[in-house]
Amino acid sequence: MTYMTVKFERDVVIIEPRNRRIDSAFATQFRADVVELKGKGFAKMVLNLA
Image 1 (cartoon, rainbow, N blue to C red):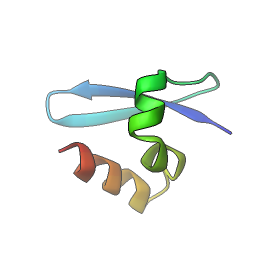
Image 2 (cartoon, rainbow, N blue to C red):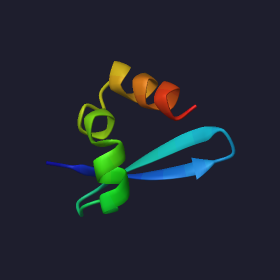
Image 3 (cartoon, one colour):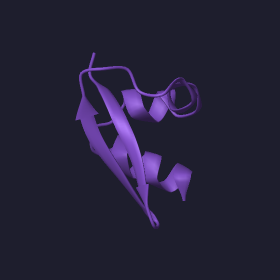
Image 4 (cartoon, rainbow, N blue to C red):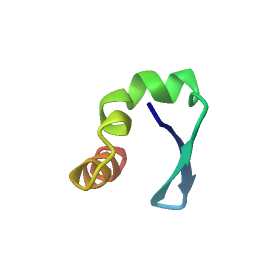
């Protein structure tokens, strides 16, 4: 499974693919959105963090 690194720049959420686990806090808080990061998943995550 590919994990993602979540960065915040102003009001934009930038997501970078990584081969290592992301921070446990993000993994717990945003697990569902990060794991399903495809098309709608990205939009859903941005909306949830907005």
